[in-house]
Image (cartoon, rainbow, N blue to C red; front, top):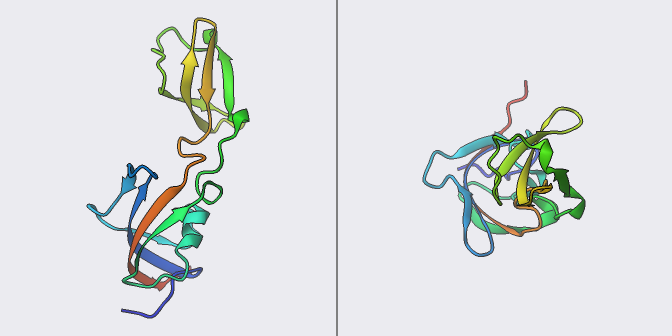
Length: 149
């Protein structure tokens, strides 16, 4: 076991679980292969990454990630009403249905149907986890210096 703390310039292998305050598991790899990433490579949201800085091999912690460090706060401007006729007749609308839209730069933008009628469909473009505290459980298996290319 090395005495290297997790932070910039390190590569980490870990098990993790993401849970909602009610205990619902959003994602976990404790029953699967561990994840390995280099700090700062974008594989982990920056707020989650910073929360585990300073941990060492063998550490296991559960950290609370606030919305501003996780998936952001809910933004009412991200809830849009779109004319029903903009949706093809072949689309079976239902509340909670996730649809994919293209933004102005043609990038994929997911949205969830909140409600609809014959005239208007209300789509929520907020991240489904926006506005929620996330419990981030981590078990640090290995920390090593990042390979510089």
